[in-house]
Amino acid sequence: MSIWRRIGEAISALASGEGLSSIFDRLRTPPERSVAFTIAVIALSAKMAKADGMVTRDEVSAIREVFQIAREDEPGAARVFNLARRDVAGFEDYARRIRAMFGDGQDCLCDLMEGLFHIAMADGTYHPAEDAFLARVAEIFGMGEAEFRGLRSRFVPDAAPDPYAVLGVTHDMSVAEIRKHWKQLVRDTHPDAMQARGVPAEAVKLAEKRMIDLNNAWEEIADRQDA
Image (cartoon, rainbow, N blue to C red; front, side, top):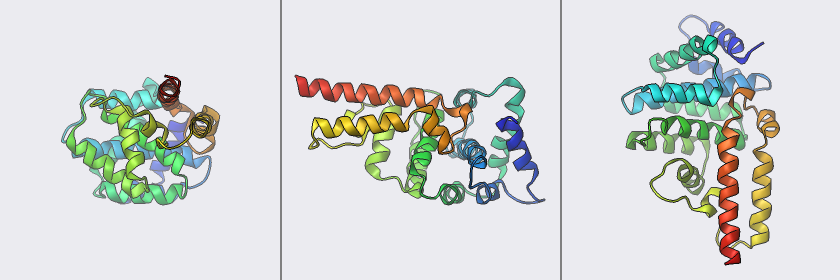
């Protein structure tokens, strides 16, 4: 069964008058977590679009790109997006329920944040309202400020990304320590590892950009040490 059919079933199971956010209280274990991950990214994207006051075709296309949505599945994705936009629950309520759903799964929450950044940057601009939105979601998710800055530096081209921030390491760490940390991040970014923690197969393209960013950061740090 495709993930979009499973999402449709989850939405159809909502009781009359029940909000989309209640789904996050139910889907806590595999394979339902991949359904929940997909709904979470689309739902928070809808709230983010509402925050900056517009929904662009680029943002909608970015959702399609993140999840590799086939044309026949687009109505299902649009249904989730529209339900979230109309839901009276605020984005902070969504974020809290999503964090509770994933528990201590910080890696999965980071995956989710990457999807949101990808969608936020789809139109080529990073609106202050989007920055405030994403910073608050990251805070609710328990993401530290340094981790959030490192993530933002990978997506927002307002300055060259700090390779140390991208890898989440410090300047006083040895090259051997940084290399070990980089290799662990690479292992965590493997599609099999991402799917095991709840990222649906339809979204593992997120790993491609992350792998490029991680490898570029490591190469820059290694080159600096060799210079």
